[in-house]
Length: 558
Image (cartoon, rainbow, N blue to C red):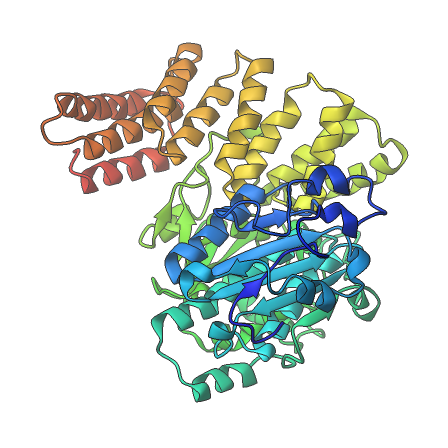
C-alpha cells in the first residue's frame, strides 16, 4: 500500500457491500459494532476516528478533536482505525491491500493522507503514509515514532494513549511539511538523528513485553532527594542519560515513581530530547517549596518548563503537577494552566490556558506534601482490591485517588466503570469521571454528561453546578454557563469561583456582541459586578482574582 496516491482504509472486502463482521467471526460484539460500516463508502466523512476495537472509547472526544486540528491546520487527513483482530485478512498488510482501492483518505487535501491502523488481538500496528507525504513522513520516521510512543504505553497496558501520542509526533512533521521549508538532505539529517533508526513502519507490539519489561520501583522508604531544585534537575538529566545509576540521590517523588518507573531507565521519548535539555540555558524560579526549571518564553515543546517540589526528604520531580499544568498545544506551542494550583504564579509571563481551571478544593487537590502518603494509600488499595474486587468503597477510593494524581486511563476508567456497576445511584463515580475527562483529555462534552448525572444524584452540591458552568464556558456556551453558575450561587452565596466564572462569561459576551446590540453595555456592567462579588467573597483564591483582573484589563473591560 506504500506509495499509493490515495491512502485508503476500509476494513471489509469481497465484492460490493459487506459488513465488517465478516472479518471477525470469533468476536460476538463485532456485528453490532461494525454493522454500519460498508465497503463502498466511509461511514462518516467528517470523522477521523473509527474505534471498532473499543480501545479509544474513554477519550474519543479528545482524539477526534486532535485529528480534526491536524486536518484544519496542516491540510493532512489523519485517521486512527482500530479493529478487534485481522480476521479473514490474515495479515495487517493484506487488510490494507484489500481496502486500498475503496476509500480515498486525503482526497480533499490533494492526496495528503495518513492512517494509523491497529489490530488488537494480534497487537499489530501499521502506519500508512500517502505518496504526497513520503518525502517528510519517511519509513525511518514512521518506525521511530511507533517505537517511541507505542512501546512504553503498550508496556503499561495503555495502548490507547500511545496511539494518540503517535499523532502528536506526526504533528511535528506535519508542520515541516506545511511550511515547505525543507530539503531531502534536511529530512535525511532528521532521520539520522532518530534513536535506533526506523526499519519500516509495521510493529509487532507483543515482542516488547518480553524484550523490555516495564520497570517498577517501590522502595519501602523514600531515599533522600536533592538539596536544591537545580541539583535535582541536573541529577535527573544524568540519570536519564544513563550516567547516574551510581548517584544515590532520589529525584522522583513517590507518585513520579508510580507514573514513570525507574529514573535510570527512561523511555525513548525522554531520551530523544536529552540533548536539547542538557544544552539549553535555563533559570530556576522558586517560591518556597515549589520551583520551576524555566527555559524562557520560547516556542517548541522541548522548551516547556519542568516542575520540582521540596518534599520531606529533599527536592524531587513533581510529575502530577507537570502533567496537569504544562500543556502541549498545537506544535510548537505550550501553555501553563491557570487555577488553584502551585507553580502558576512562577510562570505568569508565559502563554496561559484556563482549560483545567476546575472548582476543586480540599481533598480533591493534590499536594507534594501528601505525595508519600497518597502513594502508600494507593498501593494498599491496589492490594485490597485483589481480594475485594466488588467492594464499592475500595474500588471508589482507589479510583478517586488515581483521578486526583492524574494516573493513566488504564488505572482510572475501568475502576470508575466498575464503581458505577456496583452502585449505579452513587454520585461519586460521575463526579470523578467528569474531573478526569477534563484533566486528562479536555473532553468537555463527555464531562458534561457525567456532571449532569452527578447533579441529578446530588442536586445540593455547588460543585456540580460550578463544574457544569465551567464546561459550558469552555464550550463557548456562555449563557448556559451563567445559568449553571447562578444555581451554584443560590446554594452558596459566597461562592467566589462562580462569580469569577460569570465575570468571564459576561466579558466574552460583551466582546462577541455587535456594537449596536443594546445588551452590550449590560454585559460589561455585569462582568464588573461579578468581579466585585468575587473579590468580596470570603473563600476567594487571590491568584484567580489577580489573573481575572489582568484578563479583564486586556479585554478593555476594566
